[in-house]
Length: 249
Image (tube, rainbow, N blue to C red; front, side, top):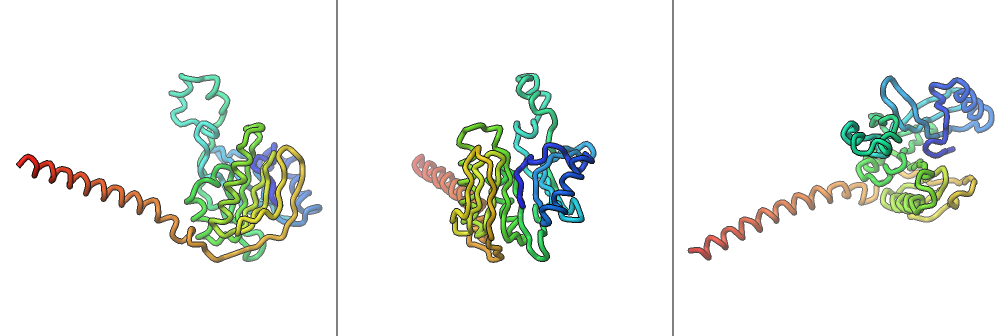
């Protein structure tokens, strides 16, 4: 079972009542692994994370968001921006720390799924890492409630669907307010929930291990294009200088 980002309003790692409620639900009712969004402190660090809760075990693994959103989840140069817009910056009470753990969860024997939190679905290298580590399906957990009735939820679902095609993996995109959907490796909409309507999806999904050309070669396109641009710019500059020198002669 997959729940969205921020689906637990109380931190079960530091709140006994919340921990008991989730443990009882997973062990006695669900009887299956549960991935859910949580926010927690570890020492002085504050993380946006996904927790894996197992029957009889409790917390088995977790993933801390690697790419917190600037001015959404943390404030770079906080003192400077606080002086400019104290009311706005003050809304972000705690700066979230970037995670260092991998986003791979072992949910059943050798079955591995990869986890991404919200806007991480837009970051190419995170997908490369998850596929390289053996993710056979991808879970995208998001909280779109802050964006109200804007098109953000539709946009994120569309990106998730494209990522399914690009990675060749089933993508489960689950949101607090929608759009939520399950998208097959070919982009097929297996199931989808409308925005702002409560619901649930149940589906059998493909688990795949092969790599698409995009996952094998896509990571080289940007640096190659950048290198070629630098080379051609250098050659054009040298050519222009030589032509100018000859004209003066």
